[in-house]
Amino acid sequence: MPRKKSLPGLTVKDGFLRHPFDIEHHVQTSGLVAGRHLVTGHLHDTHSTAYFGIAPSVLRELVATWRPMRLPGKLSEYSFIDFGAGMGRALLLASEFPFREVIGVELHPDLAAIAQKNATRWQHDGRSRCPIRIVCAEATAFEFPANPCLAYLFNPFRPVVLKALVRHIERSFRHRPGELDLLYANHEFEEVFTKNPRWRTLWRGDIQLSESDERADREILNNQPDGEYMATAEEPCSIYRWIENPDLQLRL
Image (cartoon, rainbow, N blue to C red):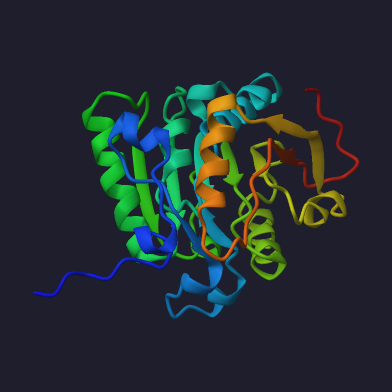
């Protein structure tokens, strides 16, 4: 049986380098796959940005920044949901926190399969503090659990899909103000939230990558043959809350 061909960006000839996170934990979350290569046959394919794993230091700091803001329940009552989960690096990192569960929603079947393999390995090694599950589906088809949720985006979609996802969230959480918060890393299309009065900005700022993460990202991105993406020392991020009624005052 012929060996399955890797996605462009996941081979040495494409400039692939492993991130130290993968080497340390024996998982596969490295590589850069441009959006044009994330083809599934779905109408939304053309609106994918790229796959690239979040710097571990950024995800950990972003969740830590959000934790004092949470409402209405305990952390153990929240589901963490990564839309455009890719190979699942953010899921593995999020499972270090005691969420109710961690869910990855990924449309591309190859990436979803890798994420599942990583999650299985991670849980087998005892690194997870909560269950992890992977859902291979389009983001706007995901059915939210009834408990409070924390959604997460590492800029996986361009505005067409991002706006569709926001509408899906608003329908799902209608009459559930305050029960969904959203972490947005590399918030290129933040106006989708900032110009919508039904969402409240809880925090906005730049998160500094750790020295080791910055070095790793720089080496990985500088090794890309087409030089399409550039490494940065910090990641612009935002945190939002669905409030439904813009006149509703919520106490943080």
